[in-house]
Length: 535
Image (spheres, rainbow, N blue to C red):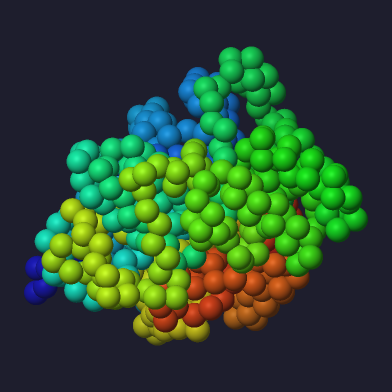
């Protein structure tokens, strides 16, 4: 007689309680399903729960980076700034959880260790680090695209006597750098946002830069009441217009047609200047050919370098901060006073592109036989993007096939939603979807709605399981990369390609273009879930 406790059964298990997991829970509840959400953090918010570094702020405007599934929610929530800070976004996530009573179905401080598909029962068996063992018909990964921190293995890390922080795992109590000598490694988005604030506190700040990144000013400001009223008066149409934009935002901003290579120098300079003053990611929309034509791109890149040279007083530092790669092939950064920070006497830039960090010592960081003494070190080294969080879980499909083995040469999905060999497993904003090249929350909502509608379809048609076909998966990966190859995105070592993580396969992961992607998803459904097999 077997007295072992039987796994608790749910209709669906969701991994992650960020914006994807919360909305997925809400939709499945509406469908009448029993659901359990497992979340590694202590509360909702996903990436905004963990990324609490100084200056953390969204690079998509608040009125656009928000849920649209509830008209009442859209009207009642009041954003205070053009670009919301991490605390405000986390407050918003908490408000959503409270308003829709989501926390009762979320188990916090619990990390999913494994998810195995059992063919005999057509169920997923999920085990957690807290000892939970549950089964579910559907397993839905809402693990986030930028949630698995990338921590390089520097020599001597264990020798350093001071604290080491990662921007993606920031202490919740915050850190006071007053009177400290600080070393920060990396000059990506989190560093560009945090460096100006840390520089105001620290006695001395050493910035170790391997690759300079392009950054444009945010020109952040309090939201004008009339502006908010204008959007809220016709929020539905505002959302429809944004869904028609390549990245899902910016429909109400000035739009310019034409090619940079056809414009006069005066026309180009004027348009780049207008976009710079407008601020934000829309800079790359100055002309239509900036991500298609290398010569056009170089015009935008050199204009930006010249702008950096006018801001940074020391010419040597200015040249080090002036990126040489294609502008836009790495995600453009948005900052507040980043370049001007290097005019401060207590901020020093260390170029580690040719002579990398040798090692951590007991009291600092050593580069080219010189030790830079610091009291604490910040790793602004980014994330194992798009696949890291998924591959950190032992996910096994049919015949025990592991996702690690399946993706050994790079991620394979159909629509970024499904993986062949893994029935009833859905990945929200997975590799092969617009995800990080789009406004994430609208992209999340589109995926969640597709998944929920698919589950309802399966229920009404008596289907037990759904799985994408191998050929559809292969064709989709080829298609996603063929689109990328028509652009300049793959021309530099970006995290879109996984190039920031040693040993990670170089495959361009996101789908470029939100409207065409949505059209494809709708077409798949209209054709009877073309590319999928039901059981």
